Length: 129
Image (cartoon, rainbow, N blue to C red; front, side, top):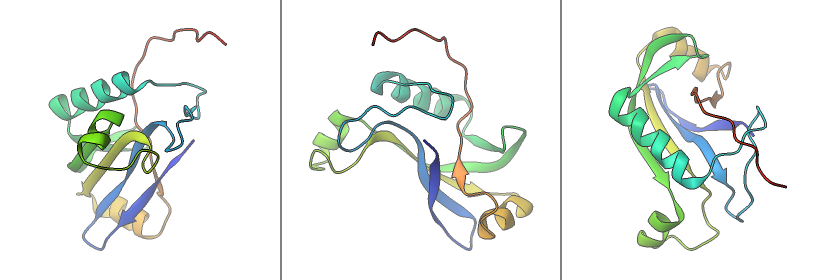
């Protein structure tokens, strides 16, 4: 599943799902590498990213092209606490970036860059069928 940029503006701010663990109807999402992530691991990864990095790269290469301006992991528990009706939002990580690189800003505006892709490392574990 690819997570497209949901909103962008002329100032270079972009927003969208960085990752989704479960769709709004409760189906677990398989990413482009055929991996799954559970709610707790996604939340922990997002917290670690925010604590240690808070900046984005372009195509997993050149870092420092954007700064995080918004981040929230919408777990089931948080959605309930916020009064969001069950089945409305996915369990996922919503991200907002302020693009600081003019070439990347232009690529987003021209729709040549249209999605988020989180890089990361994980230990693969077999999932029982």
